[in-house]
Image (cartoon, rainbow, N blue to C red):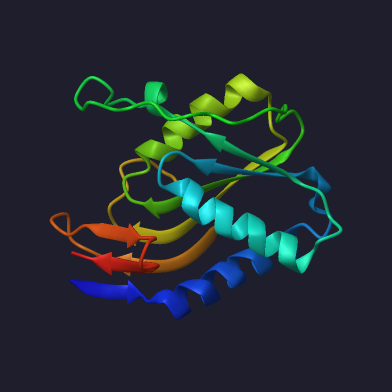
Amino acid sequence: MNTILNKHQLQITIERLACQVIENYIDLSTVALIGLQPRGIFLADKIYHQLKKIKPEQNFLYGKLDITFYRDDIRKELHQPNQTDLTFSLEDKNVILIDDVLYTGRTIRAALDALLSFGRPKKVELCVLVNRRYSRQLPIQPDYCGKSIDSIISQKVKVEWDREEVNLY
């Protein structure tokens, strides 16, 4: 097991990702952060709180999206549904999808399908903590990325939020 990001590096990465969002959207009122259930919400919560810390006077939308029934492998694996918490329309919003690890791109494809149930966004961007390059099955790339790594198919990336570190197995 190799540690990719330790607790201190992870905090710096979260701060950097939040600053990149602010660089792109000085006015956050048109932004909707959407954490992908189940693991993306941990990163989304941290980015949300970091943005609130940097710009406490700004209001922006924050929600959580369950993509269980939009996945193309729903019949292959037993998935437990999670809760979607989107109490607002995404119509004409700049949506930033947030997930922990980008691997094949299939989770993000499912999230894009699920988003349409909540309106037509003006723009959709992707923020990930770890980008596993060279493993994509779909043409999906992150707009905001904490760390890009090269890994082989037998390796796994695990984000351990209780110890707040990212490991490669």
